Length: 393
Ligand SMILES: Cc1ncc(COP(=O)(O)O)c(C=O)c1O
Image 1 (cartoon, rainbow, N blue to C red):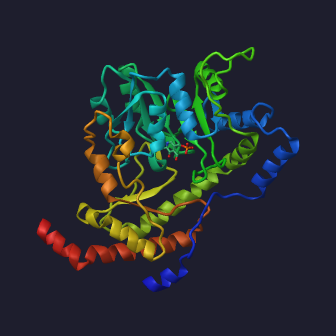
Image 2 (tube, rainbow, N blue to C red):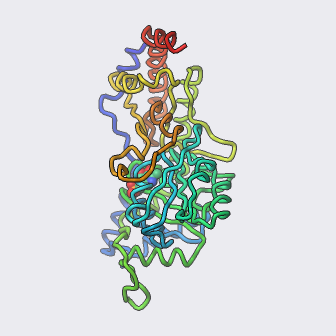
């Protein structure tokens, strides 16, 4: 067996695995710069990116925006969600899912998650529906699809809009079909860490042509045909420079996702024998492993931060995504909600995330897996832990 110190010496001192960018993206941006048509208003490149993305996911329409947050806010606004409305969101997600609900003037209502996929629970969602509920936002967390069919059934039964936040899941599949073609409307992010990037950026996909037109109007100041302003809108436009990068990145998405799945498989293999809850793929899902998060056994939850620190000291840049349920943020303090979401609280207490990026070499992933296994095994066997087990048992 390889020694911990040997693996430590092979770890990078500075970890930075950013997006995979090469000459293709640089040349695409240069072409746009040389054309001097830099914006969606003057260049055809944004439209080409929208068409290519719609074709890829299998949706009729795609609307490009300058962030995933803008995509969610634009969609909620186009759906007419506003003051007095409630929108159900998962209790365990990035703040970017929830901020747009409040930007639209509506109230986010947190529903618990499935303990194995960390995605929205259908039962918990059903329990949170009131006469004020207008929409449900499902999130395909960490690259794994939410169970969209039963969530959609529930939404349809109660006459609610369903918006799928696929910001972390480009190229993931639900029952064999790409996300972006499953829910009535879906939103994506192209921020730098995502499986494909435009630096910052976002996309809405839908089969509903009227909804797409409304989103296009909101994206551009609420403009209507004839150049007049018909409603309140924003400047949420993507630049042609970003769209040019997006077109190239989209052509590499399958390969990026293949690499991420390979890294996940390496971590799975390294950690398989340990007492951990590893990320899984439900029979209906193909994950793209935007994040690789596993759960410690409950008895080790109090040591989670110390274990992460130990991994970091040993040059494994592990962290906890997300160390708290999203409702724990002070911005939600004034909400009239008791936040009873035990699964979200439990997952947040036990989660550890390992580094994953498609620019990361596979042999480095093997070393990360091995080193992580050694460190976790030490913590699981430590006297302190054993004593704790006895006192618990
Ligand atoms: C689940 C989720 N929703 C929304 C967003 C917001 O996207 P953006 O950062 O592009 O605004 C993100 C971004 O990380 C996300 O992960």
